[in-house]
Length: 428
Image 1: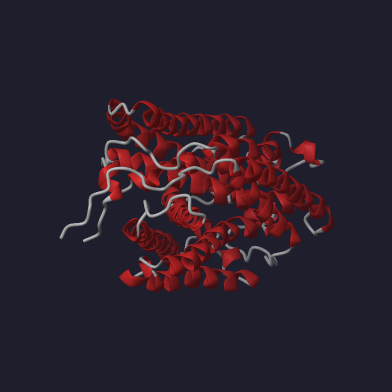
Image 2 (image 1 turned 90 degrees about the vertical axis):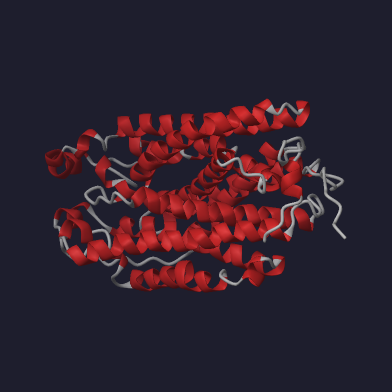
């Protein structure tokens, strides 16, 4: 006897409804208060405002990478004409829709580059190459100063956010219009533009990863860095999608329209990007270790000495070995109770990855970088109230952005032509 085929969403309510307004208010106010508290507390720590900006950059990269991962998920679903993912795609569309609001959160980082005097600094607070002496003595001979300068940094950031804004708005708005009129040609148009959209996405993410994270060590270069950044963002996006779906089902918003088969496939992608991120990280490290060239090892030296050595081992175990083993069994990937803990742990390690990338550079001075091959200082850092408040504040703001974008509109594409396929999706 065959099961009855579902042809429409059965959940009584597939939107946040009136709760979205309360969550926006709570997240917005709470987030701003906590970030303001982190900024105020930074004046009482050793590196002052520089500490706040480094921690702020960690959290900004964490959340923007997740939204970018969600945007790529949307693009690739249209490019491949995937049907299984329709029931979960709107969550990714809304996550990608937060990018314009994250652009506002980029302003403190931009000001530290184009106008550091606003923070009371005469040279630099975040990126070493902002120091005119550094640019003229070290970057200029290699002509890197033509790329790493405040004006072009700001121009490129504007281009990145404009491209991401256009892509995220196009796919979210077309999908919502289809909810109203059921026009199937909208799906065809989104499919048509998905290929050039992926190309535009790739180009902008490549240079954004260079500008915002790799340039923290401005004389170190890695052509594989954008792939490393992308892999981490995709992992974070899949974990966040799963987490949001679990929350919505626990609240009874989505009901059984999202099944364990959807979770199974999302978990398979998560498992795949655990492996992919690990492969890219290992490839980058082993090539630099084998060559042992001072210009290349300069990036790993502060991360493999003193207090950061244990942080590196934690990243190796927590981001690679343990999740690889625990996400492999099919039974666990289909267990909602297990996925709660798994995705939260993976998101914590994704955040720690950005922490590991950014924070050691705060202890690397201009003089350290001028002497290649030396032991770059004694980087030690403890997670404290500045880090906690900044993360919680930006997390609340992200919740507010998501809820504002979701509003009281459907969280499932109700009239997508492949919705029936998604509602009846089975993993064989």
